[in-house]
Length: 339
Ligand code: AHM
Ligand code: MG
Image (cartoon, protein in one colour):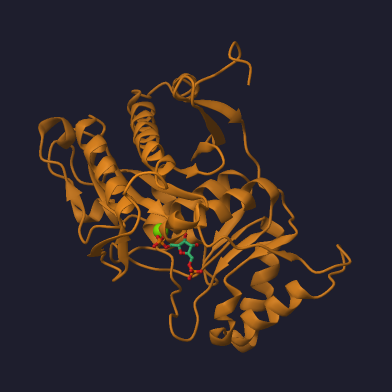
């Protein structure tokens, strides 16, 4: 990147929101604050191998999983930054049992709430693989000027105003989607700014990669098994099977899928019919991004974004990525024997 040509994320977001006459600038400010949290988390992630921050924290989260120290740090960073900003009325985090309604007057007068997975793929920290932060922004439905309520956090994904992720990979990137499209910004470490590097991202309609934890296949139903066989056969178009790639860090697997095309799947199975991934913190934001980039995300029964959440930590199966590949997978998964 030539430093003369840099467009920072702030500059870009402000330009974009000016396209809407009624825009107040609150969304740009909120995205800037999320970027700031990302930079602070990035700073710690980059030091993970150096300082005594690795290892289990001891506590378990609401899903019954052990938290790593960095999970706690990322969670607290986001909670504090969003508390101190004036655009966010409250948050729900994958790491907290309940939503948090900020008590100060500025926050109660804010129109947005944010749901996030502070550090997704955290089991990858100790092997130095990519991890990320995922966020979803909604306009609150409770009255402005009052504390936000649970129903603000139980809106279907199609109500998201914006969603994004920050990937702590070989470089650090923030990618976010609004209804105007998807744009990616790479952190320029020398100036500490996210700079536009991937304008108007589009997920290729077709891909050559399927991404799934195939080790779970003993628990899959017939439809999933026949789709896996299809992926492993010589398919007509390619003349070879699809390649299989699975990092085990959704942000990293999705980032590849967004750029190169492909399908990412975390299905339900016999022991976990709803799969593993969380609707509000992982699946909704990733589906908003994917749809804005021309791809799609479904549960196997319906569009992910149409699912009405009934609780904060809901899970859903997900098939997400290149439109043609997701549609093809549905031919197997929705076959009559699986109805
Ligand atoms: P986490 O939020 O506790 O990190 O778990 C979510 C992660 C995703 O990033 C990833 O896609 C998935 O869990 C991997 O699960 P599995 O190890 O079952 O394949
Ligand atoms: Mg997660």
